[in-house]
Length: 343
Image 1 (cartoon, rainbow, N blue to C red):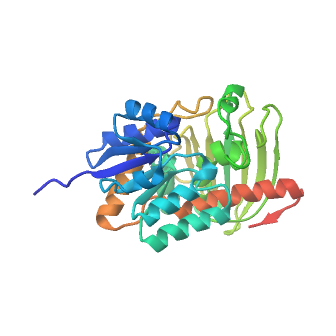
Image 2: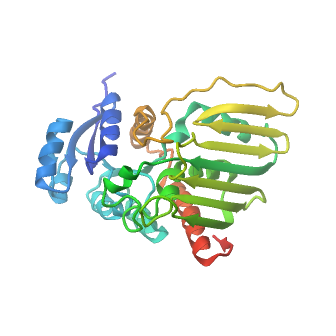
Image 3: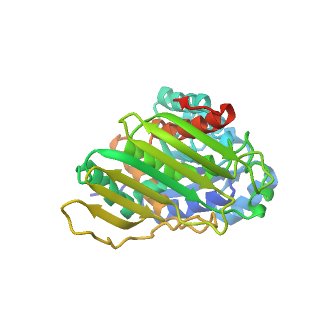
C-alpha cells in the first residue's frame, strides 16, 4: 500500500503559540509545515529562519501556495475572522487557536465562511485530549455518577505583569476579548460545558484588581445548565502563585475531580474509592503560559488530518468552540449589568 503524502500546513501568525503548532505539525508523519505568514517583511524574514520554511507577509501570496492544505491561525483572538475568511475562500481547511473569536457575531461569520466554502474548521482545545479528562467523560457518559447535579471549574492562575506589558493586545477588549476568562479560563470552561451540556443562564462578576489591563484579572460566576444542574466558575490571573486548573463533576452517585488534567478523586457509590493514576501530559499553565508541551496540540493536528482524509468532523468544531465563548461573554454582560443573564 502506498504511503499517503503528508498534508501541507501553513501557519498565520508567528508569535509564541506558533512554535507549539510548528512542533506538533512536524512531529506527525501525516503533516508537514510548508510555509508561514507574518505581519511584516522583517518579521517574515525572522520567521523563515526560525521555522526553516518560506515566509510571506502578504496573505494573498501565502494562500496562493498549492502545497498548503490546512491553515493554522495563530493570530491574536480578535484577529481570527479576517484571515479565516480569506483562507476559506482559497479552499484551505482551518485549525485555529482558542477562543474562536471575541464575539459570537464574529464567530458566526467565521463558521459560516467555512461552511459556505466547504472546508473543515477545527478549534484548538487540546485539554479535551488529556487522558484524565477522557476517563472522566467516559464515566459520565456511561452513567457511573448518575444524574448530573453540579459542575465547578476553577482556573485560579497567575500572570506576571510582564505577560501583559510584553504584548499590545493581551488583556485588551479588542485584541483579547477580555482577559483571564476568555484567554486562560476558556479551556476549563470548554471542558465544563462538554460534560454538563449547554448553559441556560449565568450570574457573574469580573474585576480588574492587580494588573494594569482593560480586561479582568478576577472572575466568579454561578451557572444554570439546561439539564437543571448548577455550576460555578472562578478564575483569575492575579492569584499568586497560580494553582493548577480544577474541574469537579458531581452526580447522584458520586463525583470525579480533575486537577491539572489528572484525576485526583474518584468517588462512586458502590465502588471502592480509587485514586486513579493520572497523566500530566500537556502540563498546566497555572503560572507560566509556555509550561505546556506540544503533545496535545499534536493530537489535534492528527485529528484534523484524519478528519480531512476521512471526511469526518474535527474533535472540536466551530460550534463547539462558540459555546464557551457565549458563556464567557454572558459572564461579562452579567457583571456589567449586575444581574442574571439568559443565554
